[in-house]
Image 1 (tube, helix red, strand yellow):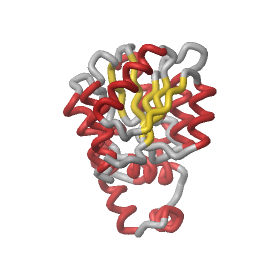
Image 2: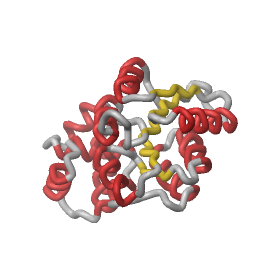
Image 3: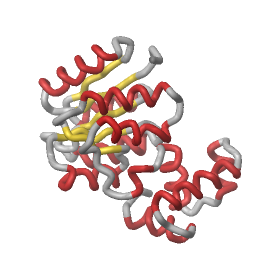
Image 4: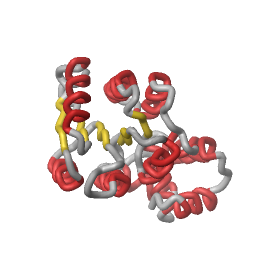
Length: 209
């Protein structure tokens, strides 16, 4: 595993942070885990450094964890975010994913799921991260097709939602227009949509812009 892999763990409960940190370090001693108790601490850490994975409790004690997910997504458009909670996926899963989380995981059985995410990051292919998570944790929520998108596909979706054309996205992101077109086709398939107009409407309706 990459010795530079960095994980930011955000949870108000010290025992949860300590337990999950110990789990990650036991499985992968070389991974750097930083803990944050509050939204303020999390945002300060997020602004200081690049990160490979965020693990966030949406139910923070003194602030809105869903809003924190949204802020982290704006700061780090390509970093996977796991919403990690003891609340039911019915209550928080959809909100967390719409805010920008890559996946919602229950605290009841996090071990294999978190390790699967870390392993997927080393492959350099974020498109399989969600499938690895779901393969290792039965209660991993997929409220709608958005959760199945890779981080790169989500970036392309947001740019399309802002009215950017394929060539503009390619120029801004430094990739080819054909690559953007391929991502667009995959997004349409995963979201079960057919046109660019429908993609724009999807972004607006789900507040992804």
